[in-house]
Amino acid sequence: VSPESLAEPVHYFDAAHSDAFSEILKIESCLKRALARDEFYLLYQPILSLTTGQMTGVEALLRWRCSELGQVSPDRFIPLAEQSGLILPIGRWVREEVCRQLQAWCSEQPEWDIPVAVNVSPAELVQPTFSEELLNRLALAQVPEKLLRIEITEHSLVRDNEAVEQNLVRLKARSIDINIDDFGTGYSSLSYLRRVPVSSLKIDRSFIDGLPTSEDGATITRTIIEMAKALGMEQVAEGIEKKEQLTFLHGHHCTYGQGYLFSRPLPPDQIPALRSHPMVL
Ligand code: C2E
Ligand code: CA
Ligand code: CA
Ligand code: CA
Image 1 (cartoon, rainbow, N blue to C red):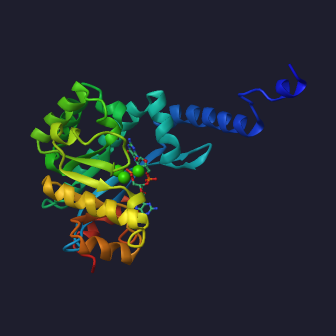
Image 2 (cartoon, rainbow, N blue to C red):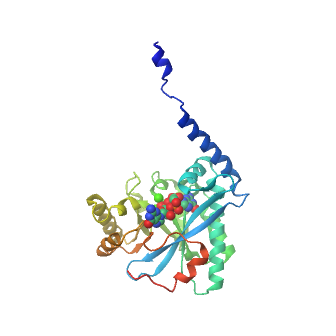
Image 3 (cartoon, rainbow, N blue to C red):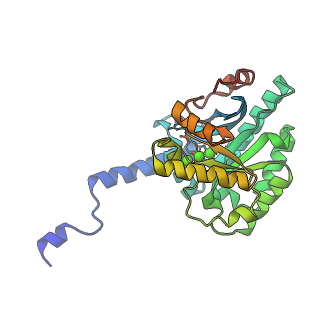
């Protein structure tokens, strides 16, 4: 064995990796205490009808302000929460908070008709008690079931899992709409669309990004819109930042949109005022 090969093992543990690793451990240990320390909160991003410019719903997006690490992005901590199982109590907290918020909005404005979509991880959806817990929580808060929606990814549907399917069928039967998030980025076949009661497809931001100039983005977006329409599903384009993207989506009769062009995710107190102010499209 030459000295060179000894000096370069296959899994070389260099300083950069070691830093990344200890950072992950640090985030994980903080994440364990985040619920008890009350460090989570939710922002709500408007979803608009692209025909009327009216806000027709909002998506609840989780935020974590860690007392030790500062603000940590969900793209960093959600995967860790999923791996460690912490996503289960965190997800329950999200839905409890959303129910509390909906209850507040409904009592301020009895004609409240803006549903909240919550993101649900695969690890949550495989829990056989998921749908029952959610329905109980809504009942407890006296929130109409149609005011809650769930967003799931194709990853939840790749294996046809009995518990997942039962949860979805049960929720749909009780008028909780199911949206497929990040549609087009999963690697599953589309056969699940026949098994699972899906209300709308959210077209992933990566396809919207390059509109209208990216030929692939345009083709994929157009195809998803057409397919959703043919299957009787709504279409939500996410990550709309530019007027030209909106013009393209308009031209292809995409039903709903979401993105910085309309609004960033907002604290809950800023949502009610938006109800009466349609965007000029
Ligand atoms: P997502 O569900 O695909 O959420 C959309 C993300 O795009 C959000 O990032 C939102 O802030 C961002 N966004 C919205 N409009 C625009 C735009 O015009 N341009 C750009 N560049 N970005 C836009 P965020 O809030 O950082 O969340 C990231 C991901 O974390 C979410 O992606 C979702 O997968 C996950 N997540 C967030 N909250 C929860 C939660 O309560 N539970 C679970 N399981 N996952 C969550
Ligand atoms: Ca989402
Ligand atoms: Ca998405
Ligand atoms: Ca995403």
